[in-house]
Image 1 (spheres, rainbow, N blue to C red):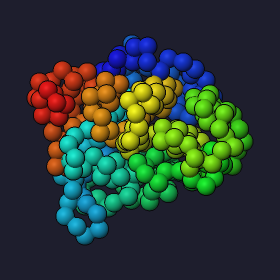
Image 2 (spheres, rainbow, N blue to C red):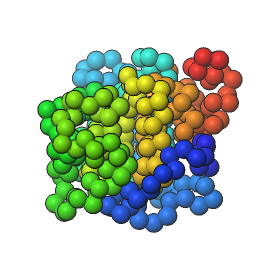
Image 3 (cartoon, one colour):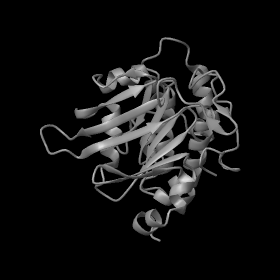
Image 4 (cartoon, one colour):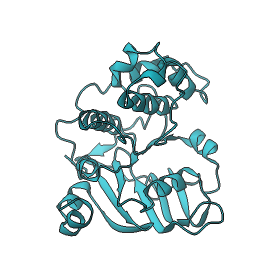
Length: 275
C-alpha cells in the first residue's frame, strides 16, 4: 500500500480529476510503479532548512523535505518536532537563515507565499482554512481567484472527488461537519490547479472513519500525478499510504525512508508509533 508500488485498493474510485483540468503534469508520471524524478532534483524540496519565526530561536536545524511527482510524502514526529514549521518554511511563511526551497527546478526561496501559490503551490493550513459564512461553492470559486480561464471543469472534478460537496454546494461551509470542511479546504486548493498539494494536519479532529475517507481521496489526488506533501499526527495511518516518510525530532531529520520501510523499522515503531 506504500513505498511507491501503489496503494492497494484504497482510493480506487473515479480518477476523472486527473490532468483534465490542468492539474499535475500531462505526461505519465509512473513507470513500473515508481514516480519519475524531476530534472535537476526532486520536484519540490526544502533543502537543509534552518530557521524560526521572526527573531526567535531556530526551530528547524538543517531539515530536508522533498516530494516527487505522483508521490505522497508525509512528515511525522512527536509534538513540538517542527513538523508544521517545516511545511510553513517550504511555503514561505518564515524566513530561512540557511537552506533553500526549489519547485520544479526553480529556486523560490525568496518568494512570498502569495507568489508561491502563483508558481503552483496549493497549501491547506490546519485551521482557519475555509470561509465559514460563504457557501461551499463560493469557497471553491475563491480558490480560483488567480485564474483567468473557465474553471467550471475543475469545479466539476472537485465535486466528483468529493460528492458530498456538490450535494451541499449552496450550504454555508461553516455549517458542515469537520470532515466536510476539510474537503472544502482541499477542494479550494485544487481549484488553483496546483503543481503540488500541501496539507497541514488534514485529519486533525475528525473521526477514524472520516480520516480513512480523506486519506482515500488524497490517494486519488496523488494518482493523477499531483505530488502531495502532508504533515500528519496520525503517523501510523499516514505512513501506511505514504511513498516517502520523514520523521522529525527537534527540527531535525531523525529517520527518512519509504512509508512501508518506516513502519517496519523497530526503532521508529518503538519511539514514535507506540510499539
